[in-house]
Image (cartoon, rainbow, N blue to C red; front, top):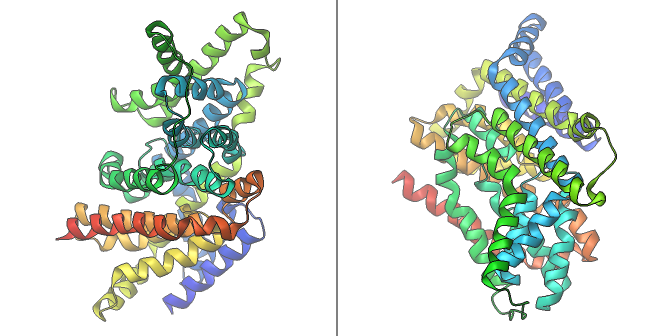
Length: 413
C-alpha cells in the first residue's frame, strides 16, 4: 500500500511540475496527497504545515536562498561579475585556465539565464583556442557545474546539509574528489590538446594590479564565504555583508564612470533580485520532508526491501532517475529521498555516504535531462544539437560517477 501511495504522490508532483506549476506548490500538493492516502487527518496535515513554516531550518533556508539571489542580481546589474572575469584572465595568464574556472565562478551566482552569462566568455576564449562549437558547449556545462559538489553557498548543498542534518563542511570534504575529477577529466577531454594563444605581456606592477582588481570585484563572494568559514556566522548573515560590499563597489564605480549608474532606486534593485519561486520551492521541499518523516510505514517498507536482499544503492539510482530526470533538478531527489533513506543509516559516517550517493545520482540524471535549462540555453547559444553534446558526455560522466562510487566503496569498508 505504501509503495502505491508514494507512486501516486510522486506522479502528481511530476505532473504538476511538467505543467509548469512551481516546484514548491507541486511538492506541497504531493505531500498532502501522500499524507491523506496514508490515513493522516487534515488537522495533522495543517499541524505539519504550521510547524514547517515556524521551524528555524525553514526560515534559515528561505532567508539564505533569498539573499543569494539578491547578491547574484546585484553583481550582475552592477557589472561586477564581468570585471571580475576580465581580471581573472589577466591574473591567470592562461586562456585554458580561464575557460576552466570562469563558468564555475559565474555558475555560483543564481542569476536569471546564468548559463548564458558564461557562454560569451567560453565563446571568446574558445575562439582564441580554436575549439569547436559543440566542445565549447560541453566546456560551458561541465565546468559550470564542477563546483556543484563543493560550493558552500550552493542552494542545493545548503538544502542537503539542512535536510540531512549533517555538517556542510564534512559533506564538502567527502565530495571534493568528485568536483576535482570534473576539472581533471574536463581538462583532459576538452582542453589538453589545444595550444595557448600568446597573451599581452604585463610587468609586475600591472600583474599585481590585476590581482587586486580580481580581489576587489570578487570581494562580495569572498566576504559571504569568509563570514561563515572564519567567524562561523549563519549563511544568511554572512550574505548580508556580501550584498553591502556590492552596493559599496557600485557607489565607488559611479563616481569614476557614469556607465555604472543604473538610475534605479537601490531598494527596487534589491527587490528585483528576490526570486519568490525559489523560496516557495524551499518551503515545499521542507513540507514534503516533514510529511515523509511523519509516515513511519515508509521506513518499515524500505527495511523490508533491504531484508529481501535488494541493494539500497540500486533503489537510490532508480528513484533518482525517476525523480530528477523528468524534473531536470537535483533538489526533488534530495527532498524526497533524504528523509526516506538517511534515517536508515546506522551512524553519521554512513549517513554522509548515503547523502552523497543520492546527491550525485540525482545530479547525473538532472545533468543529462533534455529539460536541463542550462543545457537548453547553452545549446541555443552555440547552435549545437543535443546529440552532439551527448557525444562529449559518453566518457566523462561515467568517470565522474565512478569517482563517487570509489569514494563510497572505500569509505564503507
